[in-house]
Image 1 (spheres, rainbow, N blue to C red):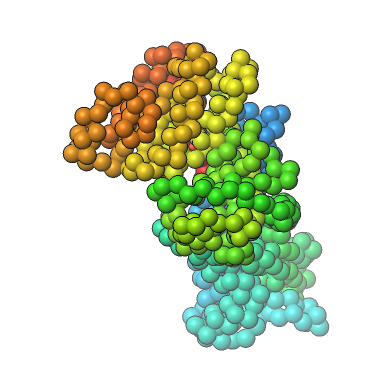
Image 2 (image 1 turned 60 degrees about the vertical axis):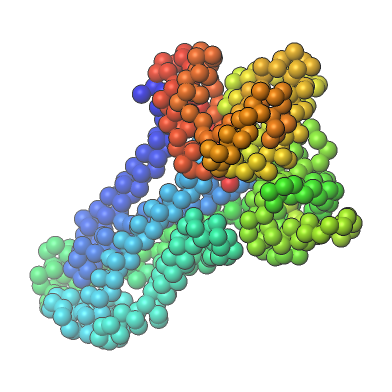
Length: 573
């Protein structure tokens, strides 16, 4: 239980608090509309659907307050960089911002569904009562009231004209502010969620990007959705003069008996804007900062074409400062004025430039590949290179690497990029002053399907190998490279050369391995070599591997506070 709590305890606590607040708001506002006399006559018209519509509306307000905060990247980077605000354990929760963002989105979808279904029943019953079809006499009698000061009346049924269903429901949906905005924000939500699936994001990123920006229309519609005040209840002054529990049985005598004057009704003032104005302002400031940074001049100083359809862009930008493992967003106006794509920085903070490695896998990256002249054999002049805009850098889990004495770095395929920055920074720190480095041991694992992907990374590993040997600390870095896409015959061919001094694939002293690591054995071996140590496990790779490493981190951590503890961290951007 103790080892589980180290890795997942705070995350589960945050989720439970969030779920608890949702449950509290739902129950509280359900009772607000289901119990007090203020909505006695409204419940006569609508029955339990009144409370079932209003309770999820309160939860929607709460979750719409939260949904923008996890994507305020500058705010998260500020909190991440402030040790006074965030301990290492809290920073790990900030790294799960997109996971929480998705959970909140699904909660919004759930409450929107409940809210919409309940209001569909409400509209049907109100339209029926107004048209005097399929409705009880009491509802029909309440629907007679209109706004008429001469008669001392105010309406409770907002439907003005006696249309039959389904024409009446369509009339409400497209002529009333609440109905029209409800249709619009529901359509926006459906498009946003359906285009956010993994398949759409990876294969049709532009669709995901453009539909996600429907959130602007969603929030505008949400803010004004309740301005029509169609949910009406008895006024406080009217309740003092007209007790609905005593007067509801004598509706025909209202206004003639002194104790039962005609009840007065009023709509609730809109409240949603009060919930979302703060996050909307924060996000607006976030976008202003991003826009300002994107206007700063960026110069591409070098383009390197690597095997396996990978290119490296080296750039300079005035005032640009980074930490290891951070990422940036890149826009190429020549390709699109709207599309921003995230890339992990592969350079070290100690270098006088910043770089990214881009694997060519889609239309945008293919366009950038050609715009940089990488599809041509002749040398490309610098002035012919396309202009790019850069937003960032933004913090990630990898920033905490130097907070541990022992770390496991696991990269899958192109997921090795954040660790290039880390290993370069380690190399520079060792060159300058290794005694000030808290990090004492690195276990590096790289899993890849194809040999060509190793070529751009091999030089860096060779530099580290040489540097550690010169410093008489060859054990500082242990690295294992796994070819996962080879069959037995291919592996056997290269195994013949296993006894040679350097690996025939990478040129490194450490031999390339075939297949996949036995993670249970790897964790147990590392745990035995570093007792009573907090070991950081950092992954940039697929979800399936993340699940495996997270389970192994929990299973191989000691229950007591003094034993070995594996702290799992995953890149999310």
